[in-house]
Length: 502
Ligand SMILES: Cc1cc2nc3c(=O)[nH]c(=O)nc-3n(C[C@H](O)[C@H](O)[C@H](O)COP(=O)(O)OP(=O)(O)OC[C@H]3O[C@@H](n4cnc5c(N)ncnc54)[C@H](O)[C@@H]3O)c2cc1C
Image (cartoon, rainbow, N blue to C red; front, side, top):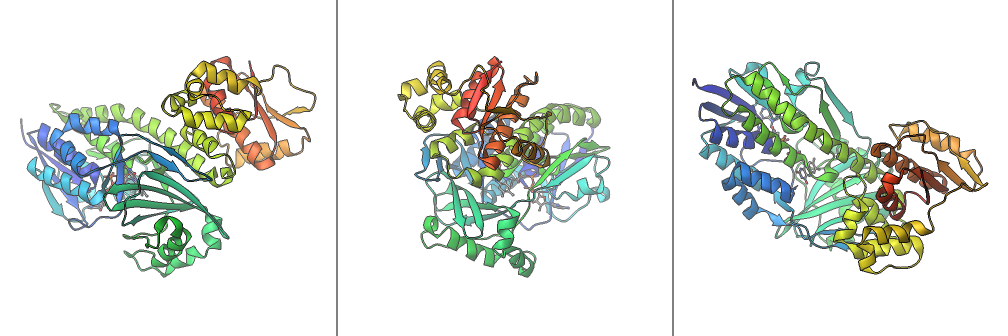
């Protein structure tokens, strides 16, 4: 078999891991990785890897997987610091410093026979049989071939910055801070014995009221926005204990959701963030990039026709990636509205958080954390079930539904006219709120209209929550019998007040 030249643009986790796996499993491929940043010079702090991703890494290359596990920091659950707070113990996810992860992958790529060059390159100038564009969220390769890749970039209106602290939090921590300007929210997690990632997000209006848009303009390129770090160090002084937030080219950004109708064009294939992104609140960007690399290397192995291999890679990965992107979008919207839920009971917020994307039902959550679900039940019904009752789906459903189910609508209920809407928290949802505002009824009701697909049911619950938050109304929803567990979850999460089974 003749030697095939593979050029990888980008030495992030996706590009380096592709070089490792192609080097190990495709002996006839000669791989060169081009990375324009100097060795060890990377942005960011720690990234999370779930237990299931670690299993995939074990299977793909046990040597680098073992090194990643050794360098990683085991997560010890989750802490939602709202009100009295809720802690969930357990979990077997790890987090690892991005710099450590890249160093492991660099060394392993060299061992696997790849060359790594410190150079800025463009796909069109590379003399290679196959070009893997793993050049990140701002991929110039994707931008230059935007039409060919049917690329779409949706920029969020909220802002976030990625900072760090020099101590290890006990566990992944979510912490909102109310300030005179508005709410800032931290997503933080430990990734080493004396390091934690500390991501802060806020909405555009809060950011402007706090004057932080002007600090960005004063920050030279390649530096951290020190004024914002000072400001946030004060806002979160109670958790930082006098320490200051650390920056690493840290500045405010708007999250870019990338999706592409095609991931390949001629001999160029997109991988990782260049092809797709999923909101940071599900912590899966590195996972997706590395799992892309696993699929691409597997598709290339033993295949002489690159076009066939690339088609196989895309058909294998696209459905999985798109599923994650859907989950991530639910999570993204949930966090956008998070500051408006701060007066709910902590266990209600935690139940809402766990069920935010629909991939975890309240029954699944209750199996692992019945005590939290018992607290949420008490917040809803006024009496606390035993943890055994909370952990048993039928017993829980009976308790939750007893006083929150109706069979007939009362005379002081108004039906809210709705069409199926795509954008509950955007303009579509706002239009429904305006229609509902004029109805002057004690209870607002969202009818079934034969929409029984689970996605439609979950969307109705989201719309109910918007009506509750925007109008302070009592809101009921028609639910198909098949969605009993989702109805229990929506009640416990404070999305809806009443349900009627159809
Ligand atoms: C705030 C935040 C929090 C995150 N948290 C998590 C988390 O908890 N868990 C998780 O898994 N992921 C997380 N991520 C996402 C994660 O960092 C990325 O999704 C991941 O790094 C994508 O890997 P990649 O290899 O596709 O791209 P990147 O890591 O972006 O790598 C691209 C590389 O290409 C190089 N490059 C670009 N253009 C060129 C060129 N023309 N020539 C040469 N080199 C070039 C860049 O220097 C870079 O090194 C987070 C991201 C952000 C922003």
